Image (cartoon, rainbow, N blue to C red; front, side):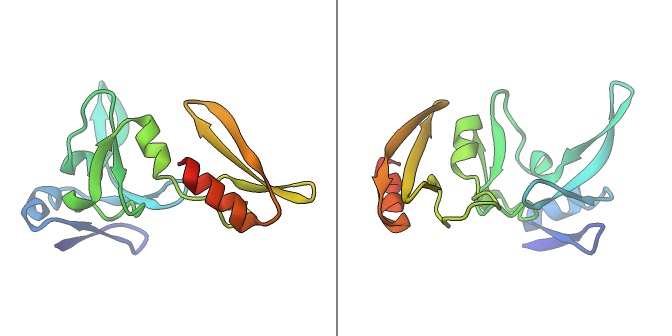
Length: 143
């Protein structure tokens, strides 16, 4: 495992055999929604854009997204990357910052805690509970 230095004082982790290949470019730390990613500038069809390091490490296939298993966008070791569809990527998403219960799928509704699960875009109500822990257990059981 080696590190590639990025801008903003960040560094990306890569496998030893990818280090020389990836280190030929200048990499930048770009801020995503919940993490930083390593990216480099490219020119495609006469327009300037960027490509992320995970796409250089694990070439993407049509219809798939490259997901970081540990949700750290700077950990580009092959064992931390996987190809998933959009649904698989959303299953590995982290909690929203405004989550007040501390559990996925659980929120306060009047005087009780409610558990909901979304499946293929449809929300399923799992029940109302006295405690947020009970609601979380219902969510986990449904998952």
